[in-house]
Image 1 (cartoon, rainbow, N blue to C red):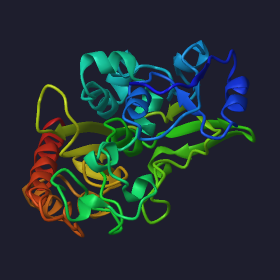
Image 2 (tube, one colour):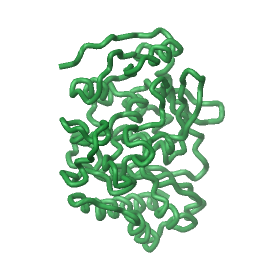
Image 3 (cartoon, one colour):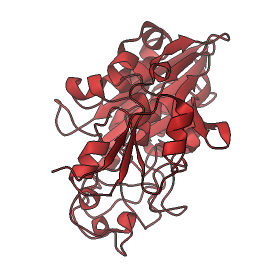
Image 4 (spheres, rainbow, N blue to C red):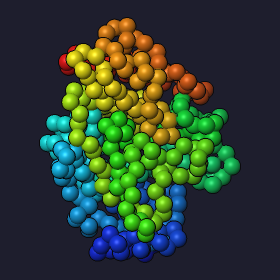
Length: 327
């Protein structure tokens, strides 16, 4: 059952920011995550501030330099099916199409997908875990088969649940953020918080700030991008392992590379070892094999999730083979 709360529908972005100044106020967009968190008593919200009626936050528009600006209220379906996204940013189109179920893609927003709460069953359950202000990460010694193998800092072992954050980070996207001090920008790759920096936060947004848009730069010449997600249930589920690739080719050679993993860490995990292996080289069999080995460099699996190591190796190998074949 949902708890009681005040429900506010501001008529402007400025009013919404002002309403969020009240301690404990929570932002409502699509609501697919927020309402579940309130129902499960993960946190309290004396006030819910809904921006769902602010039409200007839903627009998807091409920018003057050939990039794309996606309003935070654009639904996941609208992003996945947008012709410019499909034509120029294949990784984002693929990632958005892999989110949850059709019903949730029709309701959930791109902003909410980037800012959603963890899906760890200890966080979502009746456990006073470290991320909720307690003293223990129960996943460390518990049921951790779906948890992190990178970036957990031996503190919190969640995996970031978004399927749009890895491709956006790989594509060099930024987010626009509005708060009492005005507007600021932040790369998607820097939006999310490592446990060692603050174990109770998922993003660097302040409580009275609103993510208003995502900006994608114009795709460089020779860009090929993709997103692959492996999950336990094909109908809909969160990633066990996934990879977003944004590779810029000069002929057959990879001139530049961004490789970002999903299902791997508390944040979208940029795989610098894989990038170093493939940058400056053609994607031949030897390079792909080396990249598959590099993707698990530095991994720290838990008792029940070491199966992710061969899974990530296989995903990288398959995706790079497909990328090479598209040339």
